[in-house]
Length: 129
Image (tube, rainbow, N blue to C red; front, side):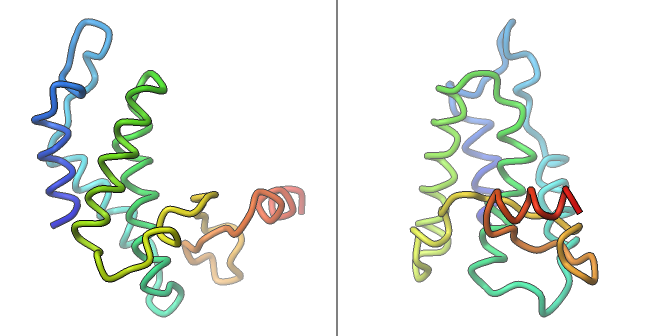
């Protein structure tokens, strides 16, 4: 429901309407599919409930947020996702869900599972080895 809510918000908001400079702001069910495609790359038993919701946040940022062209749009989008998180995951600690850095990768885990990367230091160590 959270991802569908996000698509509806992005599609209906005047802030995210296509224009001559934002012609690629055209959000569809394909974007929802791409979010779910990212979610299913995780392996059962490798993520806590909090980490799975963070993965959802990460995939939304990757699929929807990476298209945004200026910081004002990115900030507005981040606020939208945080509000949807509060609505759809009200029983979860929102500070933990939105903590930085919001990094995931499959190259750190020994079994190549898509898992959170705790810090930029961990990311750098993994990339250097």
